[in-house]
Amino acid sequence: MNFIQQLSKAEQLNDSMLCVGLDPEPGKFPGAWKGDAGRIYDFCAAIVDATKDLVSAFKPQIAYFAAHRAEDQLERLMAHIKRVAPGVPVILDAKRGDIGSTAEQYAKEAFERYQADAVTVSPFMGFDSVEPYLRYPDKGVILLCRTSNAGGNDWQMQRLADVPGQPRLFEHLAHLAQTQWNKNGQLGLVVGATYPEEIARVRELAPSLPLLIPGVGAQGGDAAATVKAGWRAGGPIIVNSSRAVLYAGASLEDFASAARRAAQATREQLQTARG
Ligand SMILES: O=C(O)c1cc(=O)[nH]c(=O)n1[C@@H]1O[C@H](COP(=O)(O)O)[C@@H](O)[C@H]1O
Image (cartoon, rainbow, N blue to C red):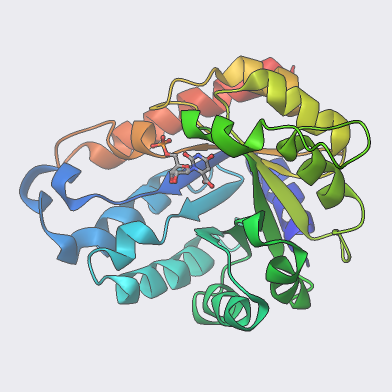
C-alpha cells in the first residue's frame, strides 16, 4: 500500500483529518519528567497511545530529537507507532533539501533508517534535489509550498516574471507538483493554516494532492476555514497540531488524557466543518 492509500484508509478508519505533531520539548514535559531528555520516547509514546484512534497521521519533527541526541528514541518511537497503530501513516518532518547525491542519503535516512511513510522536503534546490525521494515509489514526499510562517512571504509570494502568467512562486510549485514533477503520484504540498486564501489557491492548482496543513492550535489558524479552503473529495488534507495537543496538560497523571481531549476537540471541529 502506498502513502496516499494508507492516508485514505486511516482517514476512514478514525474518521479524522487530524495529524498529531510529535515535537517533544523536555522543558515542557509534565511533572517529574520536566527537563529530562531521556523521557522523550516515553512522552511521545504516551501521546501516541492516547490519540492513535483519533488521527489520520502522526508527524514527528526530527529536530526535536536530534537536538537532544535522541535519534535512538525516534527510532524506538517509529517502531512503537508501527506496532500500536499500524493503520496510521507517519510523516517524518525533516524539511531536507540538497543536491541529488546528498538527497539520496536523506531519503535513506527517512525511509530506511526511520521507516517513515512520508517525509517533508524543501523544493528550493529544484527537481533534481527532490527526485531521489521519488525512487521509493510507496513513500509520500511532501514539498514546502506556502508555509505557515510570516517569512514565507519573502520568497513564496514573489511573482516569477519568466513564467507565463507570472504566477507567484508557491503557485508555480503547486502546478509543477500536480503535473510534471509528480512522476509516481507521490507528491503532497505543505500549506499553512494561517493562510486560508492560499490554501484555496493551492487546492485549485493541485486538486488531487494531499495537503499537509500545519498552523491550527498554537499558531492560531482556523480549523473550519482550513477545511473549507482545502478539503475536496479526492483531495485530502492532513491538518497538523503539535503544541496545543502535546502540552494540553501539565501533570504526569493527566497529560495524556488532556492531549486526547485536545485532539478530540480539533478532530471534531475539522469533521464538523467538512459536513
Ligand atoms: O512542515 C511542517 O510541518 C511545517 C510547515 C510550516 O509551514 N509550518 C509549520 O509549523 N510546520 C511544522 O508544523 C508544526 C507546528 O507545530 P504547532 O505550531 O505547535 O502546532 C511544527 O513541527 C513545525 O515545524
